[in-house]
Length: 154
Image (cartoon, rainbow, N blue to C red):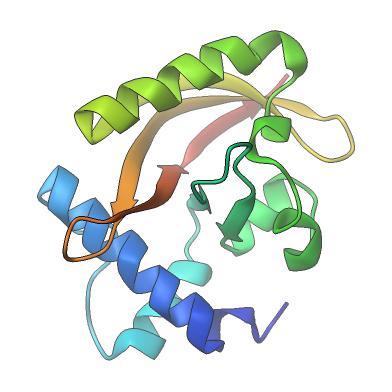
């Protein structure tokens, strides 16, 4: 896991995450200091959660920083083979799908609140999450991401 953040694909994806966040929210997710490799390291090692998925019919997680991997009790390989919907219990998936649709339509939503579940079954309440659409500079959609720093185990 230690070297994930500096792989070229992860560095590129980090730039899409950061650029899209700045585009939709008109502020930076992290200080944009240094080059793209340094920014990838900064995001990966942030104390808040950042997680994302692509545009598949059943979207698969494609990024989780160290805090996300710890919270969901997964390593990088496990996370990047997990359907995004599996981060929520079946009973909460319809609500989650509605929230993702709102973000897709509006570009982002802020102040999201919902229950999620780790790989081992630990439930936690996420509060004040921001969910945003990831896009290329030309506007081509790439997926969606979420960030939050407040959660409580249930």
